[in-house]
Length: 185
Length: 185
DNA sequence: GTGTACATGTAAAGTGTTACATGATTTC
DNA sequence: GAAATCATGTAACACTTTACATGTACAC
Image 1 (cartoon, each protein chain N blue to C red):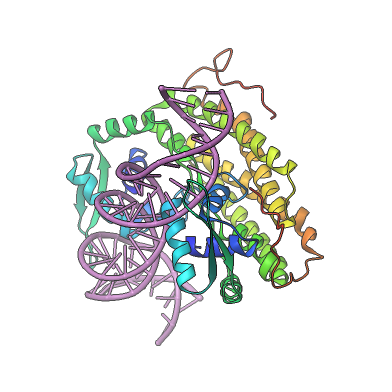
Image 2 (image 1 turned 90 degrees about the horizontal axis):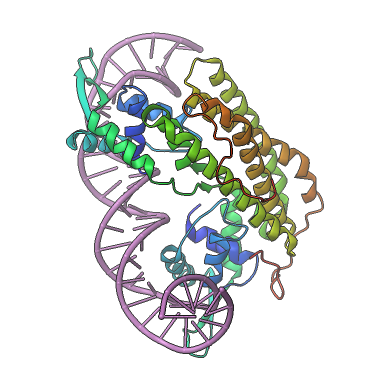
């Protein structure tokens, strides 16, 4: 799903400005499963407007750029419906943390526990932030997604706490550990 | 983490060809947390070779392009160690599924249950595939990562099974939900 | 006085995917 | 006879990030 469709979907839930969309994606309930920045959101909104899928009304502000409030149009809803008929692509999860754990084993074993401990700390913060979000009023769908996020974060946290010890005996690997190295296929 | 570093890390675990790296990333234990295709892997290997971080030896094949087997160099390991000293960036999860569920609520409510049912089916398959992977011999780190993946997939599956009903008002639960596969839960 | 929140946007640079190009061998 | 596996690689295109550009207002 490209940023254009993401913006269209967010606007299907209610009007918003580019700034607000960025906040939702960066910190709000969209932050688990999407990411985008101003550099992609603003151009997307412009394109959607030109395509007639959203309308834009400017609200004057004092000493600031006008607020541009976007609304989805009927054509926009139809386009989104068509888009949702296509089966969603597979999830794409990219975790530098998991990669680092794997690679640290071969190259810098003493680093693994630090990596895991930092991660545990981050998970706790993230869970607290999500639970705070849940205190607010939100739609059934948003709540479903945020609770899904909490469940996933909790599982990750528990897994790390439970399995952290397996690296306790980690020892440096000799310079050339090839031969019949066991790479998972 | 860019594809160049990903390739370097994979090669730190043992020698491999571009083709093999692609398989690991597309289907193997790297597939949860990274993705890359030939179009990015081959150029990355070329760049790493030019930078002296890996070496390449060609093994002649019959009626096929030579196999190019890459090995990490000492300089490559040092570069990787440096890279691992930097704290890993945040996870970036992109899920068209979660986005679709959220947007479908506003635009096409009857679609949600289908989306969830398909997803449940996919999770079962994925879990089965991962558990098959675990039967094989693999390093401590690989096992850690694959088991992490299994835990996450299971949580997602259970969450969807448990919370699927909240969208019932959008569409009654069919008596015999389709896609009810006989795979391990 | 420093940082954050508000509020928009552009341009260059980098990164990654998709489709193409080639071709034998094995499995269904 | 079709599709998958093995095996490499390029080029065009799409997408995203980062840095730039321009301010005010408020809290600490």
